Amino acid sequence: MVWLALIIAILTEVTATLCLRMASQGSRLWLIPVVIGYGIAFSMLAVTLHLGMTIGVAYGIWSAAGVALTAIAGRLIFKEPFTWVMGLGVALIVGGVLLIEVGGSKG
Image (cartoon, rainbow, N blue to C red; front, side, top):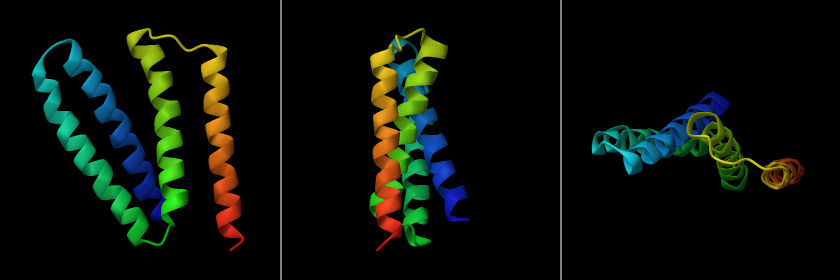
């Protein structure tokens, strides 16, 4: 259940961020899903923490997945650049989160 809550938090945060990009380029109506999406994302992050995941692990996974998914979606939807250096950065973020996860499970 904790992982489902975190996945929902990640997906709604990424969706809200993509809608924010749309709002910056066009209709301000896109701000409605931005507010709703961020509200759900933070609520589900709170549920994740309530269910027992540590804040360092939850926030690390949430932010790393958000960065990676948003960069990839930005490339696919908005034709934004995604260079090998950016890919390396995403890989380093993911690696850092994995180290936090492994280190947190040893305590």
